[in-house]
Amino acid sequence: FGLVTGGCQATSITNLGYIYTVAFPGGIQIDTAGRIAFCDTYQELVATFDPPVNGTFGLPVSTTPLMGSTSPVGIAILASGTNLYAADAGGPGLAEEYKYTAGGTAENTIAVGGQPIGIAVTPALSKENN
Image (tube, rainbow, N blue to C red; front, side, top):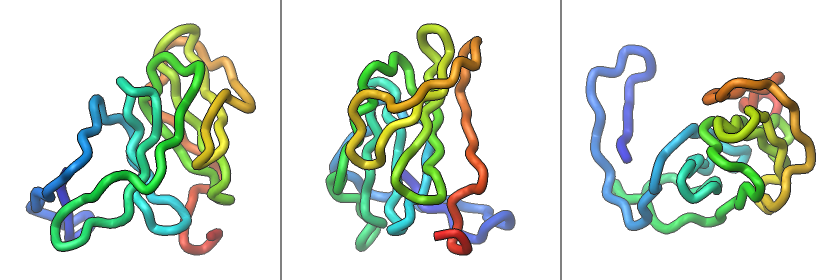
């Protein structure tokens, strides 16, 4: 885990301490509450953390199981903050929609083929539509 400051002009990263280990990190999103959501491809879940305190991440405040996904790599949280899409690079190549933070079985799937590793939604989650 690291903290990049300075936006597009950033020239350094500050390493952060951590308690929880993300087995195989995929996409990262900031949710409507300002928490940091990491897609853990190996564990097939999204681990959501409060922002770091005193340079250290704690344990996840929630985990969102992505049941039925075989290799979720990228995630995108909808502007409503209630659902997320995962790009599943395993199997037939699906974009899968899950409740955020409840998770479980996908509510909706879109066959995209290949091995999708990234995903985006519109409108994007931002302070303006939050």
